Amino acid sequence: MPGKREKELQKLKGVGEILAKRFVTAGMDTFARIVEAGEAGLGKIQGLNPRAIPSIISQAKALAGEADSDRKQKVEALKQNAALLKKRLQDMPLQLKERFQAELTGKTGRKVEKELLKALAAVEKLESKLGKRVKKTSKGLVRAEEHIIALADARFKDVGKGLKKARKSLRKVFA
Image 1 (cartoon, rainbow, N blue to C red):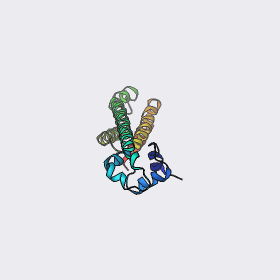
Image 2 (cartoon, rainbow, N blue to C red):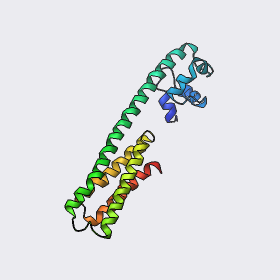
Image 3 (cartoon, helix red, strand yellow):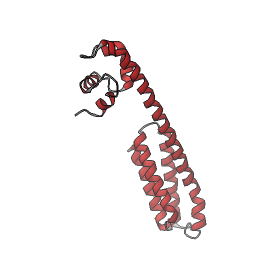
Image 4 (cartoon, rainbow, N blue to C red):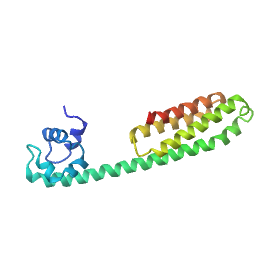
């Protein structure tokens, strides 16, 4: 059964299961690497029709460009989500002050403040490394945002716990 890389390479017209395996074995496991190899590199692959090489290279160029633009769009969406989460965290002290005036003073208030600062630091760290691990980053941001949204109805005692869960969700992205 073909793997994920072989399946991806089979999108190229003229490349079946066997040729896809040969491409991967030769180190050409992405469209970009096929383009890099050029006609000389593809000519070394057994069973590949030399007349099909220019077509395969042009198809690989097009597909490599699509993958690049898709990734850029996903990274841009992640940047927006991270900025939104950061804004929510920055606005949280005012909301907490309005809801829990009396509880903010004391040991519990300091713990919540500390967790809030740690969560903000985690978001900033995530923002600095957004280009990597797009899928995992997306999941981490969604989980963190769910925890932050749940704090809107939470008791003061649970706010610190919710912030800690949100921070841990963000930390898992680069763990």
